[in-house]
Image 1 (cartoon, rainbow, N blue to C red):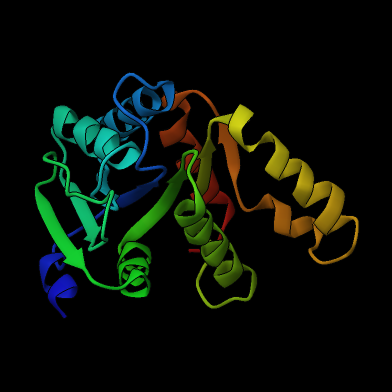
Image 2: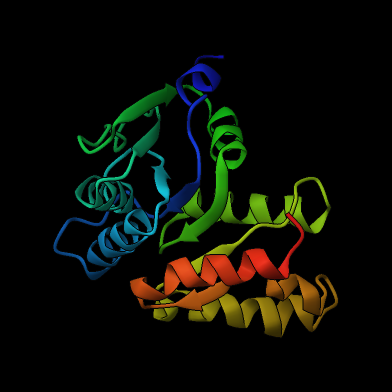
Length: 194
């Protein structure tokens, strides 16, 4: 209930996912900062998991762009401290509640390189879209070199063995240019029923 109250005024949100382990010198941190900055200048609110790494970079970019910066943090025994760049910070005890909130308020997802948590968020979302449990919405994947082997696995193993369909591979757009992201979101919205 606390999350719904805290986020009741959140509008036009784009959620950015990625590793908590990249510091500000890492190229993916810098790419996440610039992506959030571009989205903020395009009028989007930026929402993240509220922690360090990619999440911090995105909240920082949003703050510097002058847009609302939201963090949906999670209580963990290590690694997940809230970052200082949020205007609204909500802390959750359970991952599933946090994911519901991130999905509920988002118009699009931006996926940066990450670990198991990022994979969980991506694949649960794609599964929900594939099964019609949620409406399709834009997903943009950043960091093409990082995701190259995952894409090959999806095509060469899953598709080839018939465990997914060709249309299941159309869930996302890939870019390494933060300036492309607002337009990719717009184009995906036009091409899908929201």
